[in-house]
Length: 450
Image 1 (cartoon, rainbow, N blue to C red):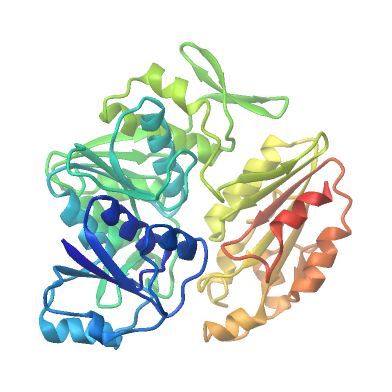
Image 2 (image 1 turned 90 degrees about the horizontal axis):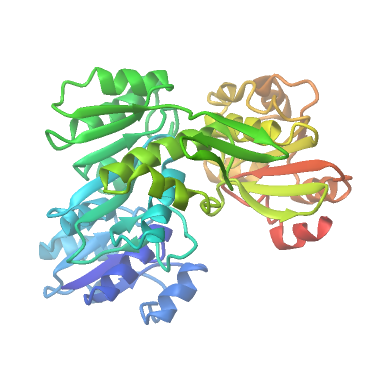
């Protein structure tokens, strides 16, 4: 097949481009800007466009398909040319479904935990040398790409994102996969620019549940009351299996899982990660991995990239970087670190960076999210608010939203960096939560603090 990508440089898009190239397809693409690691990786496979920009002359009638990324706009000149020629235009999830129509589709959904659960499943399958196709939202140790597609593998494991599919397809991505096996980890309001009410957001998970193949299996976290209601109220003819936080204990900073074969030390920690593990176990069992084999493999799982990722540690200090930005993720991650390091000072830093987190009306959702931390800092950039064309938010609004009298707030990247570097981190767990980089914080340099 001859495939052209419009906006090839995105994290998901460039991985799909590489996967199709590895499958033997003829692949081309365009983008107006491409940054590393996408740029380096596309260059490695000879897929980096010779020059940046949009070139309608690349869109010719003998192309078998166009794959359209979210970075493109509706008036993109290449898209307009493709529409004029009547070419088949796919969104990223739409094309993944086309590639997996004859496979057993396993889709992991939820507001939080889906990347980690998908990563756990792939880690276990890889450990036992069970080949599957996959798409996951983070780079995993032992995996070259975030997307892998073949003709021969029976299963495909897909991380099911609820965000929109493309500029011309307003359906959430996970509505397009039609899973045979699915998981829902939790539901907490997010993406308010697209789903303006919690009810509207929750409805997307109802549609996802009802989109499952009849007779399919839904695994769901029964400790999340919204998930429980969504799944149990569904009239779709599917099998329903619950999971919950497994029995465990913490000793000398290590979390142990209680199993029939004895206590199993884990690399990961926190109730949310233990719930993720329980869900991943159910999925793996549906894919032919028995419980003992699952435990053997999961003991070496150290986490997905940027998900409670330990970036530095010595005898008295540990530094974590985490992608958490939504209120439920921030609360779960902060609580997990404090529970794991009860005898240390937990310094939790949160960057408000996404559209939702910088929205004045949404800020109240963060009430109490940083309470488990001994010291709490919020950083946000007024420039980011302007770029997203939102109303300005003040330090007073943020302080009122978190309802924490001793909350420290910074809006200047240099001042935030100076604060960090003057901290005595002896007997401290430093937690840095953001989907950004605090206005240019050098995480490699940060490692030298300890």
